[in-house]
Image 1 (tube, each protein chain N blue to C red):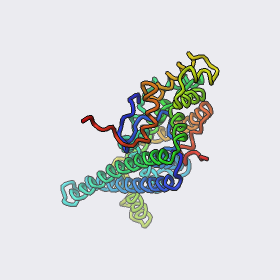
Image 2 (tube, helix red, strand yellow):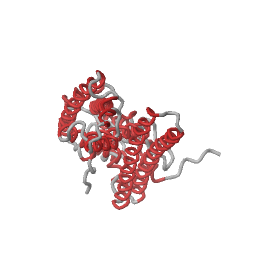
Image 3 (cartoon, helix red, strand yellow):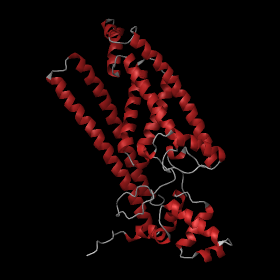
Length: 171
Length: 218
């Protein structure tokens, strides 16, 4: 999301170019289909028409596969950007961006940061000179927004990106 | 969205995002601005039935089809499932916004989603009635017909008017619907721009940048 301007902009240029190409392809197909429908009215049984219908099918399939490939490229780019961010040690920025994506309020963001650093409810409440009940409620809201069950899973959310490997299956 | 993240590396982490994208993918942006420009040009500048009007109409048809395919095959925030048409939640969103307590959505907000579907339905009506009016002639056929007429061969007019355009009841109805739907499009566009403006003010977030080049980052 944040770092890797060269790779990011190169990737963006590539997907934009692919999109424009997909549009040209779609435009060509739409014209061709219009033409084929025009032919259909004249003589639908001719070899010429059957051949054109096959070409049309190929064009439509090409657009569908092209779209699918473009989606994969975009998703891959996003995944790579994220992996790169983590690898470059931009964990703080990643956490920040993720907090923003979860739409945490500024107060919730502070609390979430302190929770990630390992402070418990009492310590956070003291640091922020707030009631423990308030901090607990904020943490509950944070976990709900992040869609995690609790503090352990919340911390693991960010560590997991660093670990990279999947969990090995029990022997 | 609430599932814990245990997916393997490389897999797309769907549902991570709750705020709308900071930059829409190129297909969404291309179709958005392509349709916006073509509709404005065809509504305000080009003459109905002219070669450029028909060509832009076909371009809109291609852009619309591409966006609909993308709604099925695109990345998560561009897919229909990310912004289902739901009038009730659209009303709820508008009410929340009046109160200043709106929440974030991973894609279009519910009101914006209804707007998108309204646009697509109206665009489909405009292009289909346009096709009826021209008898389904592609821009190439329109061009060659016009060239034939210009060179004195009036037989092209017979094909052009003979099918279902012109004086037939269907052709007249299509023309009527075409004009009404085109005006509806302009009305929707005005509402859309107003909505984006109000929403950007209410959320203190630039909603236009993600549709252009994304926000400048330090």
